[in-house]
Image (cartoon, rainbow, N blue to C red):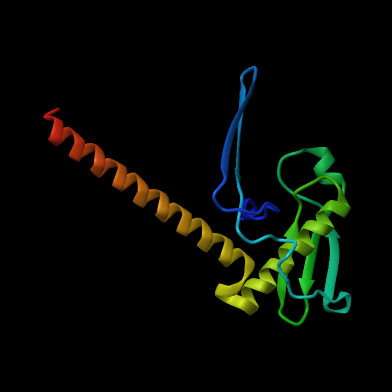
Length: 152
């Protein structure tokens, strides 16, 4: 889901970069979407409707994860939606990310198919379908050429 949170704009551009350093390979894929996150109007989060608590994180990291309370649990009281965020080591970054996730969940709940995440995934599906159609057309042209030239 975090892949969809890009701040770029046009859907046509897709870039793929592979970085290699020693024995480690890391690939980066960036998609640009036709709607921008900063231009989209998310539901407003009022501080009095939120219940925020900080708990100890879990997962890999050993002692450093076990002794710091930088995992944020954010609850929207009217809807009952709870979001837990422990993506970074910074408490402030986790607070921002938790609010972003909560905005998306509320948007999804209230707006349904018109929500930001739904629009981005629909754009991605449309792009994938168009790419498949072009590949099929290209294959048909190749087969017609082979038949016409007597190849194969």
